[in-house]
Amino acid sequence: MQTNDLLSPSAAPTASVHRGAVIIRSARVIVTCPGRNFVTLKIETDQGVYGIGDATLNGREKSVVAYLEEHVIPTLIGKDAQRIEDIWQYLYRGAYWRRGPVTMTAIAAVDTALWDIKAKLAGMPLYQLLGGRSRDGVLVYGHANGLDIEHTVDEVGRYKEMGYRAIRAQSGIPGVKGAYGVGRGDMYYEPADGTLPTETLWNTTAYLSYAPKLFEKLRDTHGFGIELLHDVHHRLTPIEAGRLGKDLEPYRLFWMEDSTPAENQEAFRLIRQHTTTPLAVGEIFNTIWDCKDLIQNQLIDYIRTTVVHAGGITHLRRIADLASMYQVRTGSHGATDLSPVCMGAALHFDTWVPNFGIQEYMRHTPETDEVFLHDYSFKDGYLHVGDTPGHGVDIDEALAAKYPYEPKQLPIARLQDGSMWNW
Ligand code: CS2
Ligand code: MG
Image 1 (cartoon, rainbow, N blue to C red):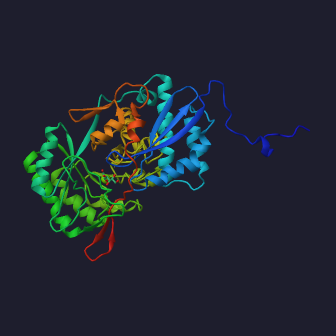
Image 2 (image 1 turned 120 degrees about the horizontal axis):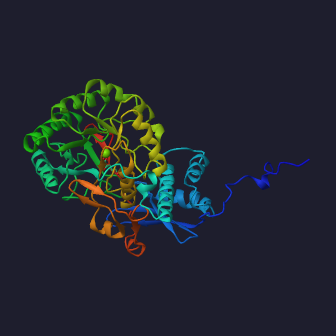
Image 3 (image 1 turned 135 degrees about the horizontal axis):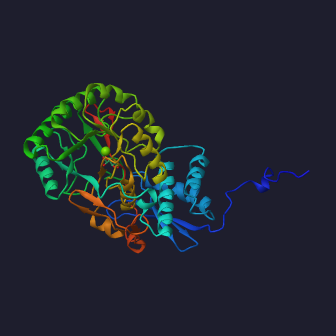
């Protein structure tokens, strides 16, 4: 009797390599620090075509490097680079210990690199492979921040002059040392500033009385012709967030972001009951499971998940499709600690995705832009992708090598009595 040799261990089924396959020959992780650390995965194929993906997880970069080098790259060699979905499923299900920021950032880097390869092989910009253009340009928002209300109002004016149509406003708070979002310098904001976490203080009472005054002054000065956004950065309890949302209603914010920690997705129901200020959340989410209830119960208006931290293009597309069923729009995170590789891929995604909302765009430093050559460009408040085949971003490895890794960690926050709080 013919034994079914598929059952014998020696013939364990593997993804057969079909004719016309594009074989992954090598992959490596490139760590560079042009002003801040970035981790990039480069996958090379037997066709001489390579793709790159962002693998940067701010403050935990080396964890993703190890995950890729020890547990992922060896499994990629010999696989068909065209089998993006199968490789995604292999890395997600094969991890056994599913989900989490390190795993999903590693998977995202592979996924982004494979989409880059597929688009290069097709001779098309990535957005074409997703379904083509849904818009001419990608609306972005910049970060204006100041030490106090007057300084922040001036900074918003400066961003208006740069052409931004949407601006996030964050201000220092009297008596609160190191309030979130107040950058050092006039353009770039990098919170990971110490080899050990910098300790900052938080005072909710001071913040709740100060924030509405900031936006009252912003509207009085700049009117309602500009979209204003604000990031609460996980600092409030749900009822405090409901109160702030209500206090901000007269100033018509585009969104109030991360108003309370979102592990308990149900917490947003309480906020929703008290305010019509639009709610955004999700930059620290890494799978659809983190936001499924928020979206299905319409507890938010924008989902902030990203190409680099939520499993790449393949998974972000699933999140966006679920969101579109409930009129939730995308608003992907785009801080400086997401590399230009992520920004490039995100812009192709944003150019296609039907339920697009807005894209965060914190500019990278000139030395970062020199390491990561890209074809996207900013004009009149929009970012525009180029038509280079792939996602339009590359890495200058020789230049990258000139910026060695520097251990950095994100800050922590404590309340005035010393209790740990949410940074
Ligand atoms: C912030 C980020 O841009 C934002 O919305 O929440 O700057 C965040 O603080 C950093 O990405 C953390 O690394
Ligand atoms: Mg944020």
